[in-house]
Length: 340
Image: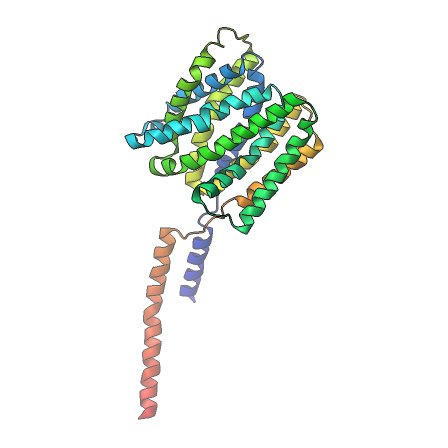
């Protein structure tokens, strides 16, 4: 009986060793909240400076902030630089320049909600690059997400060409993210997330500087836009990535990716509450549908036993083997006696 109880305890350890604490899930939630608030910060920053200035300042502050983390300065191979330059365009310079222009035409809440389509585009690009049709579950998720994005955008098309153009900019930016995250994955697996992001931000700052720097002298600064741009760069472009990297190390990359599901509701709440933005009910429903689609295509976590649990289980099995062998020998001895 004691050995059975020990085996049960180890089995529970094997099953539960990946359960995350409240602190772990707060680490997962924090980047989603920060990224959801980023669209509010963009809108506030636009009150002081033009779109190109917003993009350059957030990227430059993000690069400077990430420079304080030693892990970001980890050396990489020269062969990684072509991929990093591609990332600097696809992940930072291009999409982060699209969002400020879009928010001149549509609300920050709607911009944040449409970012729920990013996992859908990541999956579409991955399937195209692999030249492999997605499974039935993933295909259902893609169709659900596309349907949700149509519902989100539908009211804006009736508001005129300006709103429709803003929607198009957001979708193009999310498609760029779809390519970027597929390019980033092998680089991040080999070198870690922070060294790749830090270098990509540095390249993106150089790319956005020519158009961004000239807008700074023309800006009309006040406290709220300044604080918003500082928060946008330091937290939204830098620290959120650091927190997500820590969270992925504690709960796993798949679970940590759940942070993206918080972005649309946070952007919606802040836009409506603080900026008094109007969002059509059908767009809110579409955001929920998009999140359902993203959930369907989310990779399923694999539960793996911890090394300590495996070692303890093997030890218990080894302890039980002699008792079984003894029973077998006794049974054989009894059979021999009866046969005699």
